[in-house]
Length: 79
Image (cartoon, rainbow, N blue to C red; front, side, top):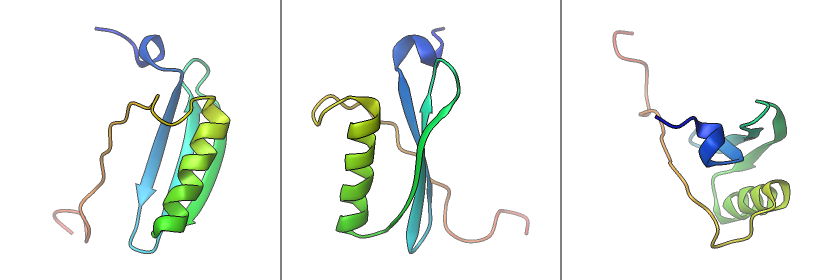
């Protein structure tokens, strides 16, 4: 099994909410945070995240690979 750092240089994690999304760009080789941003959940916020990711990762549009996962809305099971 490959390590993530062997496959990609940057990972973007996003904590999604109803009104905002908070993203962190991580360097897979060091685990360091390259950038953080909280944006609105509208087209302008999405564009801001795309621009941030492109600038900080050095990858232009069309060179992305993504895995998107979010938690379901509402309280955690059993609460």
